[in-house]
Length: 497
Ligand code: BES
Ligand code: MN
Ligand code: ZN
Image (cartoon, rainbow, N blue to C red; front, side):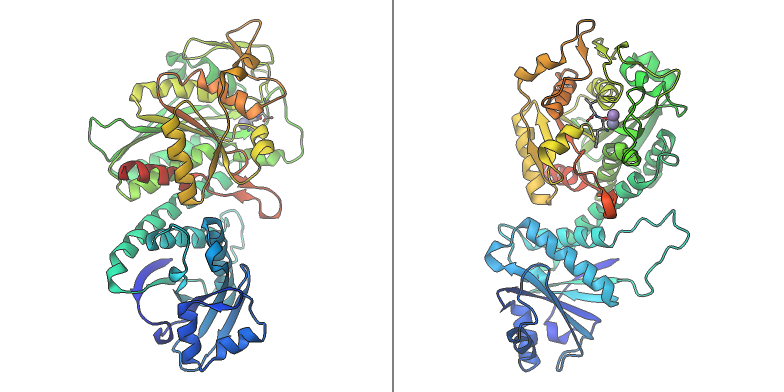
């Protein structure tokens, strides 16, 4: 879709649809007032009759309103004006996008830019609106024979601003919003593919595509024999049970100066997690195709940053494997040596994410990172602890925690800290090796992070457990594209600091 920024009065827009806000209860926004006045009080009359209260979720569509040049006016309930926060704003955009899609307008001018969101700028509103609209309109139809594309899709979306002085800010926000939306789309497209198509090799080819698309990126794909040379015994203990060879992908984006230390993103890329010999139960096992959402979010985030030509150095490290039961697969009780030299007793082959990530974290040392952030659908326990709203955040560095929490607030793609206290470390004790790969019944998200922390001692590190946020189950099953928004916002904030 094409997004532009324009100033002008709502009744003078010669366009398919004008969108304006109504607040609870029954309070017209400035643009709704202008339209109301032009139409001789039509809107206020309808609202007095109870057609729209102004609560979030409510909409009212009017056709051919007198003394306006548009075909339709869409009034959107925005809730109480003083309660408008990020999550309310995201909800409003979602309602707007799905209503517009259903009513057949192809060109839209939105005046929702004028609604006040606490502590947020016009640019922020435009950026998040684009992300919200693109999210709401996304469909994964690649594998359907009937693509059911709308005959009248939304083509053009104009953000109205109050004066010409706001055009520059608005246009910059459009560029940022569109780049993030395209990173999110890439993340969803890769993550929604099933395990038979989205293999470690497929992910490697997606990374290599990025190198073609963006001259500032360099991609390297390492095969199992090279990983053996590096001593990645933990990684290989997972990949050896699969007919699909595992790979370690690195993507270097050089937008900064040569001496600037990079931010390294490490993304878990398990293209299917059967559990291995510690086989998972059958119910909803199909969803374990999403166990590569960390990897997909790294590809999406770096794509967005490269598209924006951000002046920063980034590295993506993606360990990617399939976790399968097999005659060659690792067995409970097996002991392997990680690249760091530390030995690991594999008590449960379903705790495979940490086994591939630990070697990737050791590998990340060679980039002399400013910070390392790993992103992984790591534990069901994180979903139990935090549900599906924030990602779990655990880190060995306070400023990194604060940076990620703030970026989460700003992007609407939130995370929440869990304690990485030493008290939990003893749960990983093993009688036979340096550590076990599981930490027992309690605090599963934390002990998983404790395990990773033992491989991340040489740099500032944060772990995002995205098991609860990376995809939705049920009727709306599919990848969410999170936490691409969070990661890009963190990068933008670091550049601005
Ligand atoms: N990929 C899963 C984590 C997961 C499970 C994410 C369910 C989303 C929903 C991970 O590899 C895994 O299996 N973790 C185990 C760890 C356990 C064996 C210590 C889990 O969470 O059950
Ligand atoms: Mn698993
Ligand atoms: Zn897994």
